[in-house]
Length: 240
Ligand SMILES: Nc1ncnc2c1ncn2[C@@H]1O[C@H](COP(=O)(O)OP(=O)(O)OP(=O)(O)O)[C@@H](O)[C@H]1O
Ligand SMILES: [Mg+2]
Image 1 (cartoon, rainbow, N blue to C red):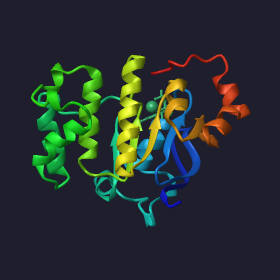
Image 2 (image 1 turned 90 degrees about the vertical axis):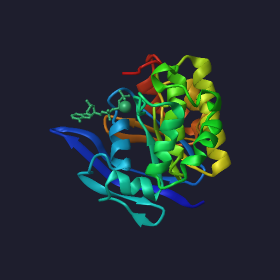
Image 3 (image 1 turned 135 degrees about the vertical axis):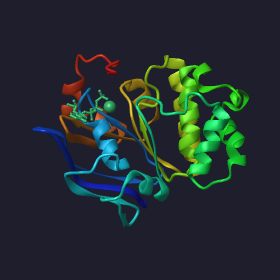
Image 4 (image 1 turned 120 degrees about the horizontal axis):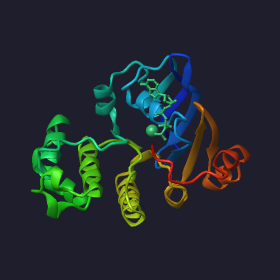
């Protein structure tokens, strides 16, 4: 198993708050890993450290064999890290096709591939629709097409199904896992809905109060006492 991403003791504080507190893990090629934890656990901050949007206070990150710790986001993107955001990031005044073209050009790829990309995410028929006129699930598909434009080896998806009804949730996750398997991509995603987590993740990382408290197979993490304590009595729709 080859290591795609390694985080070694990464940390980030905001004032006195340790949002990410010495977190270490490795992702192997093909992992579909869920990063779970209650609101404020540090999941998005962790993504911001991995994507380079935030500089870590300490620790190291490697992409394959390469130390990327001090790298800015665009350099990490070029090296193969693609990410989507808790709130979909698209150019709202442009059509789905124009968004895909823009993302391809930003990645120095051929914009002619934009319609293929939209087909890949299941919205080929909506190519000429402005993003403002799309349903939220389809906006997330545009965002996914945009991130795939740079041909990433690792996808960081922050709540890819937030705000969706359960059938749309299922369809988005089937799409993501299908693309991942077809393209040999590794995925780390955050998700509050436990049915989605256990339905799709091959591996689960659990955070609480900035710390990684469990990391293993879905079965092992489901049986973990600290994970059970945190989720006991909690609703599964804790989206902020
Ligand atoms: N830019 C910031 N400045 C100050 N505090 C921050 C900042 N970003 C995050 N925090 C704090 O860091 C902690 C971790 O936040 P983070 O957004 O990483 O949590 P999360 O696990 O993604 O939560 P959610 O499930 O609600 O998305 C929280 O206490 C949050 O208030
Ligand atoms: Mg978050």
